[in-house]
Image (cartoon, rainbow, N blue to C red; front, side, top):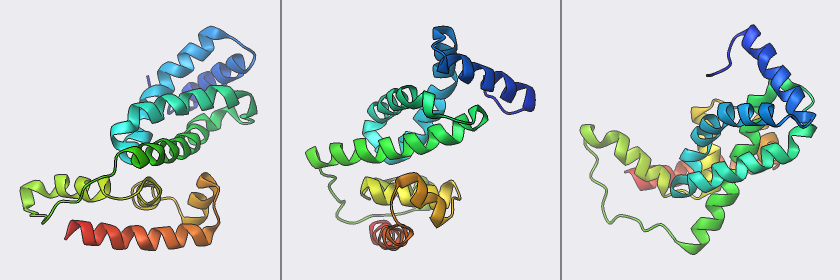
Length: 171
């Protein structure tokens, strides 16, 4: 069950408040609501390590749940944690298994989505996160910088490099 209306937001805020006080049933319900969402956030960044990233994200979310000051902001707060964890897990996994580049991409209209996914897969987790947050999630550079805990200039330079690498990989 997704939370989207004011009554549902009130219910979510109540769950968060109860979970912050140690209510295990409320924690379990939050887990049920957040797990699919966190998995969708981690998947485009962590790729084959998405399940690990989602699990690490959920652990971090529950460890820090007491720090959440505005229970209504649970999804945005969880997304920021999940994005950082996805980058961290993907970077750790990449060190142990480098991605190989294809010799010559052969894009066709029927394979467009697969080719875009392939080009994204070739990016480092940091570059994939920047592109995803900026062009899919629609965050501005300042928000991306805040989520990833890096300066805005770093976001701009990574975004520039990510776009260039994406173009070279795709074409």
